[in-house]
Length: 317
Image 1: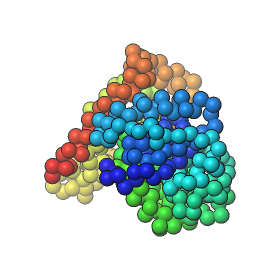
Image 2: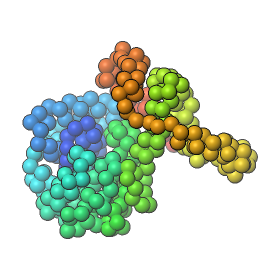
Image 3: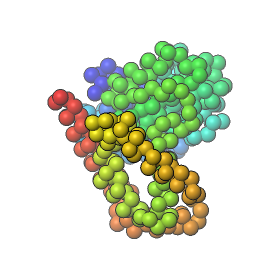
Image 4: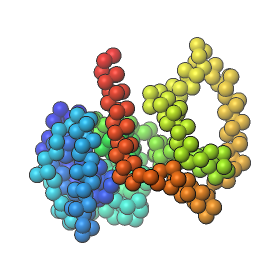
């Protein structure tokens, strides 16, 4: 956890939707003063609804109950960032919007404020193109939901300073996250590129009638999901090589992988009308008996159980 080093520090959350509210929940759990800036008329009702829904999961992870006196709202962006130590942006994924927003924030925020974008794919170099000090901006991309999953991809731009990178890593570590600095910018970063690549094959297999939506999810949760939660792809294949490790794996199983890679290219994948109809029908068949909230609650309980179990195991070593 944070050991209270962030307690009472002021953080502005730009955008109070699902991602912004998730960040706000984590910030409140760490005792921070949280300002949500969003022009939507009903933002207080919407954001507080999300935050109250997130609070029990954070308590289950060992955080204290929220102090809602630490939460405020300010629609005016310049006013919202004026006295902030940290700014976590969660605006629309449009370059024109983000570039203009950071130009305004840079002028209004304190010189020492840490400027962080949750963007899922637009790199800092492009976002900072209208800033006079582009070295101040850095990506802090969470894996959804941010209040729950540990990963934050910290991605510097071409001009981001080493000082800003170090401050961002320290900030997310203090929140109880697992920040990872990427060595170079790439559209979509790492987690989303992996997710996109895997999901492409998921859609292909379902569209071709190889497996159903629900059965494919079972394949993942009963095999790769468990394996990757503890080892990741490279370690898994290193262990898959037995005593010979990854070198033996490459010799014995590498050729088979290359055959499958070539096969992937033979199948076009798109969300055409037929594919969308198939996916939506099978989503309803597999999960239509529960609401989105019920499914999300079940997911949160299971993910928290995994996270807490792994934490406990590592702490006992």
